[in-house]
Amino acid sequence: MIKLFNFKRLGTLIQLSQLIVIGIFSFTLTSCSSYENFKSITEDLEIPSQVYRADYNKVWQEVMKIANKYGLELYNQEAGIIKTRWEDNTLELNFADSFGATDSIKAARFKLIINVTKGYRGTKEVAKVTVFKRQQIERDFLQGWKVIKTDGILEKSILYRVERALAIEAKLQAIEDKKTKEAEKNF
Image (cartoon, rainbow, N blue to C red):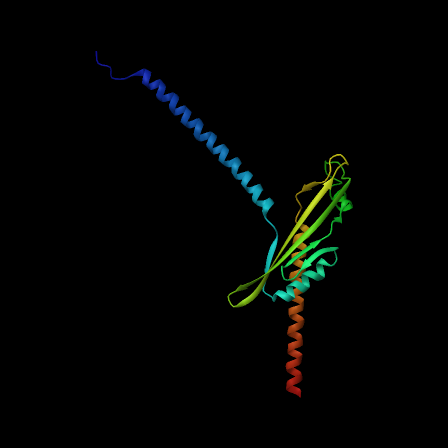
């Protein structure tokens, strides 16, 4: 008798196809979760920065005006780095989290590291400012200091303040140039 169809082989093919479907399904789930992990890692590593179309010295002066409000530990214009001392912000963190589900914090502190780098866009000089905030908390004296992710508000507000100060400085310079030209015409 001639066998037209092998049922034994059909069973193994069905099992193999089921394994392939399960493998594809598990790969899809794993790739989605790895994307979420990648997304959170890139958000953690993203440091707020902004490029300003201004002279490096002007940008450095404006950044120093803002950074002087925090205790300066180190500043070097040639290297383009500013580091502040540890500032206590326990009250701010406890107030911001007062409506949350976590316990209050015993102590909190932060340090700012600001980099100012010189560059060129075409033939025009630009300066890039990067602000990194290192936030630490201490829940109890046994646990010690723990580094936590910042909310990014202070960093972005510092960049905004630098932008506004440079815009105001540019407008004042334009007004001064206009007055000088009018004085030259009248003379």
